[in-house]
Image (cartoon, rainbow, N blue to C red; front, side):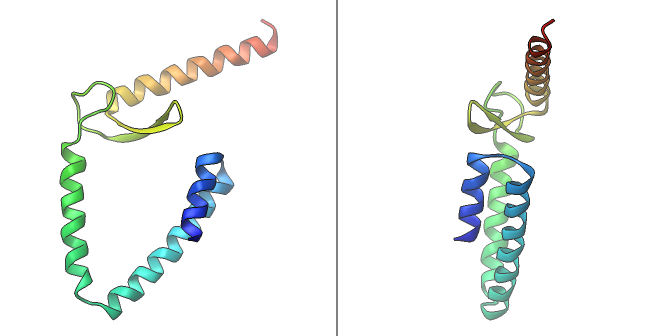
Length: 110
């Protein structure tokens, strides 16, 4: 429940404090998972199988913007988190930087 709350806070306000809180809660979950693996040793095999399956999905997933290249990063665009390739990621970051610079110039009055 704590991790879910922390993730909701990040969604509402992405800042250093909210991200640090998610990291702290992830560490707590990791500790609990390790304890559960000791209690239920058979779960480790199932976990490994599912992680491998997920890795294959991620490797074969195509960029949500161009649809050509494999996903290498996740970006928040229009309040939605999407998978993008390296090329599209660079384009989007450059676009955001230009937008930020324009806003900065307008505020200075130039």
